[in-house]
Length: 373
Image (cartoon, one colour):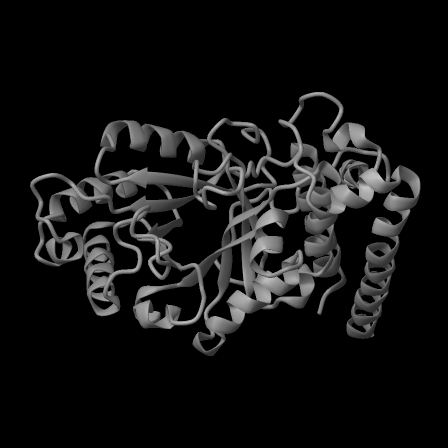
C-alpha cells in the first residue's frame, strides 16, 4: 500500500512539474514581454547582487526558488542530510565549489569541492583548510591537479610512473591521514578532453594515463588510513572509456554539466536542457554500472534563464537512479576557457536559488524515506 502511495505521489509530482515547466516560460514572456523572451535564450546577467537583475529581485521565475526555501508549516527548514554523510550509495548528496565562502554556513551542501595543484601546495595550509571544513560538519571532495614540477622529468605521465612524484604523493597522503573521512578524491580530471594547452595531462596517450592514474591510487591505498572514495572525473564523450582505469580504481564516475546558452547556440544551434546534457554523458559510461557524481554543475545566462534551467534540472532528478551527488561550481570560469569569441561565463547564480532548490529536494527525499518502500 505504501509502495503504491509512493508511486502515486511521484507521478503526481512529475505531472505538476511538467505543467510548471510548460507554464513558467510562457507566463514569464507574457508578464515581462520581449525582454524576457530574449532573457530565456541568451541574455547575460550582471554580477550577483549587483543592480536589479538578481534572481531575488527579478520577480520572475527566479523568485520561485526563494519561496522553496520556506517550510510548509511556516517553521525553519531543517536540512534532511544534516547528519554525517551516509556510507551507502542510496542518498543523493549536494555540495559546492565555493572559493569565496558564500555557502560557509549552508550544511545542506555537505560536500565541499577543493582543487589543489600538487606543483605548488603547502601541506600544512591544505591540512588546516580541510580539517577546518570537516570540523564544521562538511565532507571533502579533493580534486588533485597533476601540474608538472620542474626537475621531475619532461614527460609528466612517464615521470609519475617512474616514481618521480612519489614524494608529492606522500605529502598529500599525510594531509589525507589528518582527516576523519570519508574523503572523495579525484586525480587528473578531464583527462579525456583535448585541452593540452589548459591541462598537460588531458588528451594524452590513454594507456599512459591509466598507468599513472593507477600508480597514484595504489600509493594512496598503501599510505592513507582514512577512508577514501575515488572519483574518475572525465568530460565524458566519444572515446572517453579508453581512459577508464577499471572498477577497482574508481568508486564513482564524475562529470561536469554546464549550460552556457551562447556556447550551445554556437555549437548545437539550440539551447540544451539539463536532461539532454546529463543523459548524453551518462550514456557514455552506462555499461560500467558505476555511481555517478556531477562534480561541476553550472549555468550562466540571465537570472530568469538560470532559475528556469535549474528548476527544470531539479524537477527530474528522481529519474536518474545512477546519479548520487551534485556539486555546484560557484565561481567565474578561467578566462578563455570557452574560446576567445565568447565572454567568460560566471557560474555564480543567485545563492538563494541554490539553497531553495537543494533544501526542497532534500525535503522530498526525507518525505519519501519516511513513507517507506
